[in-house]
Length: 360
Image (cartoon, rainbow, N blue to C red; front, side, top):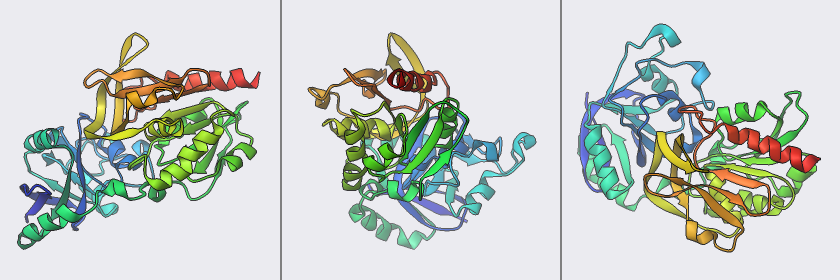
């Protein structure tokens, strides 16, 4: 059998199908991690995207429940150079092929992912489709040219929790977690220090304040942070709560915080995705896990009270901010890792110390 990855610029890659038997449309992005394919597939921030793994062999250590970052797969399709159907039994022996089938996600293998990644880096993120009928290639190119990008939709509404929930960890303080598509390890990392109240992304600020939480973390998530529903939802919420409690933002939460104070964001050429991105912070360089296609405009922070204090070594994009006067700070990367290094996990303790200081 043969399947085709079709890009909006008319490029076609021919390969072999695996996973679920279906066509898929989305935004084609790549991740540079040498491991962590399962965590990436289950990361809600990949909602609406066709994920390309740059590491040439995927699936070799199988699938394990312990690595899930959500309840299922969120990307629309998976693209690999090669996958293995005979993984190590160290993690249970489940195959990547079976994993994709279980969640209704198609895959394509046997294509030159190096060439594909070079094309994306040169031309920027491209819309694409994974199809099986060669007769429909030209129609697919035409459809892609007029199809809106997935980020134009309110993708966060598709991945947020349906209702509030409380996790009691026997801790002295309780913080809120505004769920814009959180990874499971964010909740786990917060739970080391706090009891946690998880709120849907569109929860108004008064409900969060009335719940009695002592601080707020705004999570990662998919899509454009300046989408109208994000602006009138979490952006407004962060603005309302900014003078009331300590706030920490991760990934999309970093962008939401910037917008809440009057800053702006922009779409990057091809984004940062992987677990090897270097970040300069307080005189040190940390290796971080990242998954984002939008970034904060540093110059837009002038006069907002926010200071960009972390930068990507490769392109100097903003990787984090702090407020001049308020206990508010953010990270564009993922300090909770999964996948990737845990070099910056100390940021969760920083939130704890900020809550402690306010509670005294």
